[in-house]
Picture 1 (tube, one colour):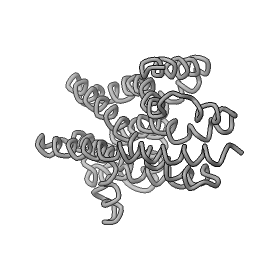
Picture 2: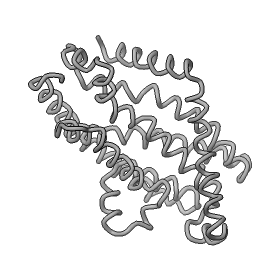
Picture 3: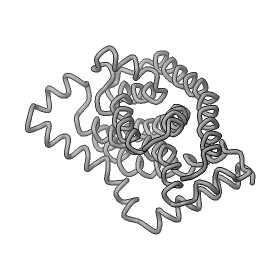
Picture 4: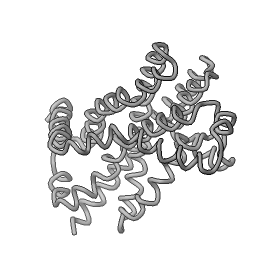
Length: 267
């Protein structure tokens, strides 16, 4: 089976599930608004809107809708990668996947691709409307740029996730417990809800090692009209370099786990 056939099969699987369970798609579309509404109402109970604008430079409505969109975009791509071995184990299909002749890396390349179109749909129903509402037709360009950056951040998150997968699954044991600890930490370190320039030093250092966090910073600078083109290009360059750096490590990490699993057998 070629890579194209693998992508096609994954696309049929993803969209078949989406159209069968339309409530999942509606939830993804509503997620940025629901989360933004919850955080804003909680924030209004504890402080003023003006204080938030002074600290972040952006209206809370735009900031949190964008943050929700970024999280759903990155999670939509990374979660299926991170959880796929467990899902296959629980479904009883892991042993067939491990002994298949298909190059394993094809699977991990194919998994994110169909989900990227869903990211565009979620952005078109959240980022575009609120950008136009606040900034008029000029917001359409900014909204489209944010969607493009979100796609990039989702792609760039795949190779570090592969590294983490190899470590977690290679360590053995109840990997789902470890994932439930690591996943929230990654979400915080991305800086979507808590900008990394507000993080303590150690948090910033770890955040700098995540490629997608650099793209998130570009988006946040874009929202507060403090985007310097050269600085933005440097952040995208760093993110790209980290993405490429993690790729061979991620492949070796995945191969290590799968080789170990083949030797142990499926229990």
